[in-house]
Amino acid sequence: MSSGQSIPLLRQQSPDATFAWRGGQPVTVARYLADVRELASRLPDQRYVLNLCADRYRFAVGFCAAMLRGQVSLLPPNHTPDLLARLSAQYPGLYYLTDGAQDTDILPVFHYPDIPVANFTPDAMPEIPAEQVIAIVFTSGSTGDPMPNKKTWGAVCGSVTAAAGRLGILDRHDLTMLGTVPPQHMFGLESTVLIALRGGVMLHAGKPFYPADIGAALREVSGPRALVTTPVHLRALLSSGIALPSVELTVCATAPLSRELAERAEQSYNTALYEIYGFTEAGQIATRRTATTDEWHTLDGLSLHVCGGATCVSGTFVAGEQPLGDVVELHSNTTFLLHGRTADLINIAGKRTSLASLNHHLNAIEGVHDGAFYMPDEKAGETVRMVAFVVAPQLSNGEITHALRQSIDPVFLPRPIIRLEALPRNATGKLPRASLEALLRQAQTGTAI
Image (cartoon, rainbow, N blue to C red; front, side, top):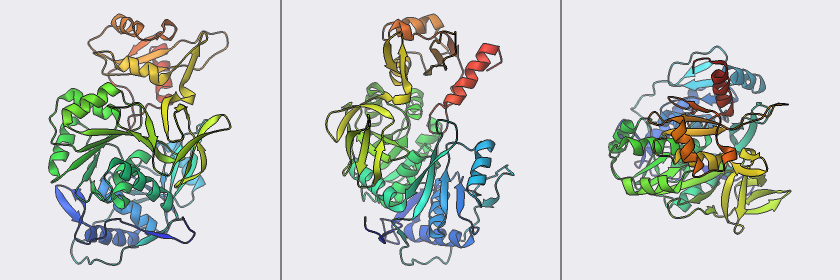
């Protein structure tokens, strides 16, 4: 992409076309642009913003309004007081944009204002320089300090356009993307907001969590629908037995999805289910239709190769060479198998496996609603054993252990199995290691969980 190039804010440029669905009503492109311009004129004169709007439409308005003002949206992995205090020190002038109550004295708060409906006129489509940094996405980092990854407008446009093309929805102006994931995380941002901006599909303002709410939100939409979700949400949806209206496409990410679950989803909802693989430093890089193949295929313009003992991705919208944090088996420079996170590899008594594999076998047990293995840190003079956190109210520990013996090596059997009513998953369905560490400490000290 040449220096100085600009990219329009929206791919869909017809003023009367529908950009979003909100409260069961369509919002036109002209109205969306008017809201963006009005909010941009009211935002504080600062450099950095933390957009916590729960309404996905308002988030999208705030995200683009910040771009027009040259502000950078920060997307941290969590919003704990400690992390916010560190971000406030590192990014002077950082403020909250919120459409709800925000109980904090760490950052100044700007409340999303009431924007009048009348008197908006279609103006020229705003264009954003391709090289403009529009977001900084953080990983937790090995030391716990947030590690920043800058995202330019050109890079994110390239990523979501390539993904939309692969999924067959580029310029599908009749398709609405409903997400169960928040837009404040990279998957939700790319697959529900950015794809509406630059993929030519429609955004749904809601963020339903419970199965009945997901069904109700889908029924609000007139026309073809797509569901953007996670394996955890998908499993809960299937277990609920809630009937859904037709879902043309389901997009899943944030954790490995089993073929069995993908097949059930495709059959239950008459949908085509695709997983997206990516990581913070590079964004979305590959897809697979999980019900039919284990093999991943990189997005057009990207290729994989071995570099310095790791597997790296490069090309088009990826800056330089970015090493994957996973163990992969290359079939070609565009196709591969995943074998789990590099940091998740387990070696006990000379035998190797991955947490992803162990979790797969645990969650495949009938009666296990949710579960996760955990490997504690080694301590001098102590034997480290695998731990399993399990939600399975109808099964005994003995039954779980017996089922695991049929599929995993005995050296990896969990000792102990810790029973929970629910696992402490975050908004994207992930399990922070710190949360599992805290649960284990509570179990060991007899503190109520």
